[in-house]
Amino acid sequence: MKRLLLGDEALALGAIHAGLSGVYAYPGTPSTEITEFIQSDPISRERGLHSRWCTNEKTAMEAALGMSFAGKRALVCMKHVGMNVCADAFINSAITGVKGGLVVVAADDPSMHSSQNEQDSRFYGEFAMVPVLEPSTQQECYDMMAYAFDLSEELRLPVLMRLVTRLAHSRAAVAVGDCRDENPLEPDQERTRWVLLPGNAKRQYASLVAKAPEVLRRAEQSAFSSLTLGPKKGLGVVAAGIGYNYVCECHPEGVSILKVSQYPLPQEQILALAAQSSEILVVEDGQPFIETRIKSLLGADYPVTGRLTGRLPRTGELNPDHLAAAFGKAQAAPFPPALHLAARPPQLCQGCGHRDVYAVLNEVLADFPSARVFGDIGCYTLGALPPFRAIDTCVDMGASITMAKGAADAGVFPAVAVIGDSTFTHSGMTSLLDAVNDGSPITVIISDNLTTAMTGGQDSAGTHKFEAICLALGVEREHLHVVVPLPANRAEIGRIIREELAYKGVSVIIPQRECMQTLARKQRKKQAAK
Image 1 (cartoon, rainbow, N blue to C red):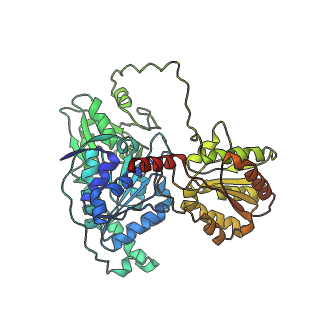
Image 2 (cartoon, rainbow, N blue to C red):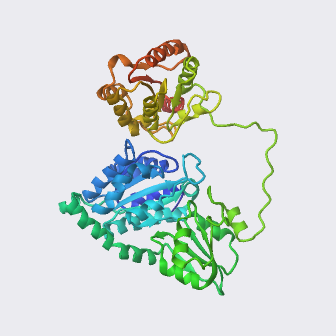
Image 3 (cartoon, rainbow, N blue to C red):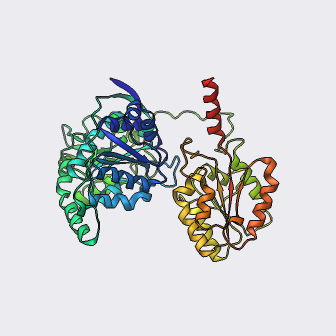
């Protein structure tokens, strides 16, 4: 049977069919649809597979490791920057090893369509010394999941699977198979491998290093990688992931091609390709991970080109036009620019509560020329753009509160932090605790729209709990306010902000009103149910 699926959906269905017992994730584009598919799949519902959103990527990784400890198969999903959040647990999971299969999916975002950077998750796999898989098609997204879980259990290691935006968010027909049963509940009895006291950790690390030759052997023999040698010595191509698709579209005849779908890099196949080629072009979406390693393997005298040399663009995602130019082919004429169309930059939805927050904040801070507003990751980051231009920074999840604290420590006044509800529970709570412990003179605005809005309206971990959380962290009751961000309430909200700016300690204001998009969806569902 064939199904038309996004790359994310094919991966999710492959995991279910591979005997998945639970998915653990924090929503982040382009990975969000993996968990959403599992949440809605009939088999998942019938089996009661765990698929509730986690507070952040670290808690997701740790919970999945717990499920693996119990002998069950677990999937962890995140976008590339989420790997930074879960790195502690991820790196150590390679040292403990796993029992039930554990697959970590990192969806990278070249060109930063909805991200702060272009980091490449393959480095994490190399750092942890675990197998890394990189599908080239939606079919491979599906097929690789069963292989990944089997490989994880055979090697007793987590497996990292890396895909990119263009593969995650494009559709293709995918041939699907049968669904295997879940693993039985069999908690691991080898306690010492899970308790990383130095004595145990040293033995476990030595065991991890000892597995390296077998991990490499599996990559050399992977059925998902392939080497096709041309009839005569000429250009050789090493292509990985979505880049292999683009090579297939436009490469000249007779070119030798090594398709890389599993890491560590298959050194024997690279050497065989080099022997049959006069030069090698490396095609990879993301950073020049393969290119630098091939240069090291073949030596400085062997010509290797790619993103480092400028034959392919150094930044941004690849496309077939880049490959056509690299192969010296004439490119298709570009589409003419659209005429008489006004630019439409992204903006907050009409009626959004964040708009009322920024309108009031700008009005109040107009009286404080030295004021600085530290923003965070979420749809409210659009407050940096016209017409509000209300925030001065946005660096990473949870940075708003700690940056405001640091600026206040340096003497900035007033220092204001704006953070969303989901981001606050993701990584803002510890920042607030630091501020409370220091008695920092900052005003924190937790703009609560009752959902994780930027990624499509997933559940927010702290909904209806923020007052209790802030009080438990030590915020004083008289300096904790919940307001409703509406035009009619702006004067009252402005008065509260002014009073709290004058307070020489931590104050928290929680503007709370449901996201317009999730509210509209709820209303449509109600109408459809009538």
